[in-house]
Image (cartoon, rainbow, N blue to C red; front, side, top):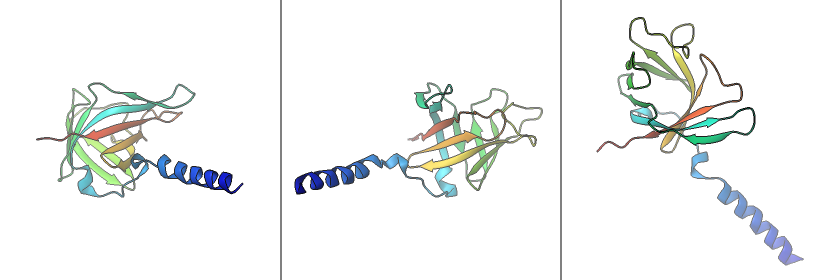
Length: 145
């Protein structure tokens, strides 16, 4: 009986130790963590059932600068703008005249929930059309040599 209890205890401890991966760790926001170039590599999607990650080929690339500006290849019509992170929300304001997109809010700003993880961040849209089942985009840091 002691062997069974010991086995179950070790199994439970092992389960908790190995089930908490590094990607579960959320990093507190620091402005300089976002600086640099990032690429959208995966998307979390659902068609009303379970969620699953899919790989993104040729995903958006976005570069954040220390002065609060960014460059992105998401839209052909406009590639530059200003960004602000406040309370876990990333706000992107493209600075091209007459540029609009359905993902903007009423002030012309694209907003997303931002979660920082080691080596990547996750965005969930909070403006424009929002996924009712939930969706996220994963951006990984691009190392520039």
